[in-house]
Image (cartoon, rainbow, N blue to C red; front, side, top):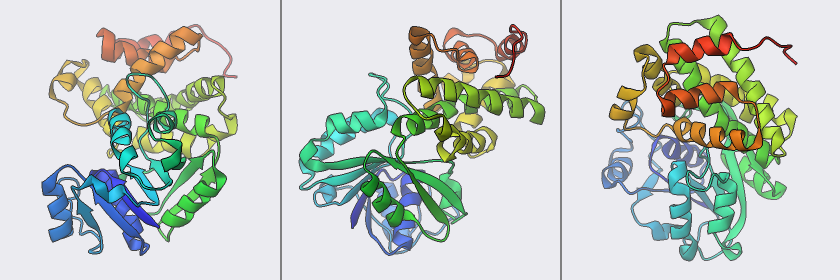
Length: 331
């Protein structure tokens, strides 16, 4: 199968190398000529992995027409770029391809899940199905072949199995699933929880606090996800609690890192002034706030993160307000 990975960032590079390790026909498409040349000539992507030598079989290009006869197209771009890149590649595809999305979040303009965006923007003649390849994973570890397990989730079981077989090897184990709603919502909302976890860490709170945050955050993910038809069991799997744990506890997490800065400074001002990275939880917090308010879904942690990011509330006040809410039974 010919695979094209759209995006020469950290995750796109790590996943493409996995396919190269598997002996697959894979090409990275990138818009940054320096990154593309670095991959082709030096077998490195120095911007993201300065010390890591990549599989020498891996190749990259700045020519998007490489997708024209692809069997699989992997979208390794930020959520904001999903719609425009799908519209750009649709007329270039010459047959039905499996489109694999690895971003976690929502369309920032329409609030759609990303699978729905892809189905809207790529014609049925060019789309076999959408597969979400998501779960507890950091590119920094996959690129050095650390043991990792994630999910290939799709409404099309055969395509999910095809992607499972394509990517799986001795260091990356893929499970399949078909709860697209629950998996995508869990993977998106955990980014908000990671910001909250980072904020609490920045404020100086320790393991007890983080354990409470992860546990109660999972309840919010379940509450939100099942409202829209997700299966509760999904949230105790890799795209739920698994993704939540890794993102809320790791220094590799951009969302945790952002939260830590906000918490340690007790203000969001410098983060918004200085940040140059894609922190998906920032957009997701706004969307979850708006939808939860409209639907009457109780999301207290997400709401406090929203208040910090968009209403100027001090992080230390949010932590206090969560603790002094009306007491209740856990379940």
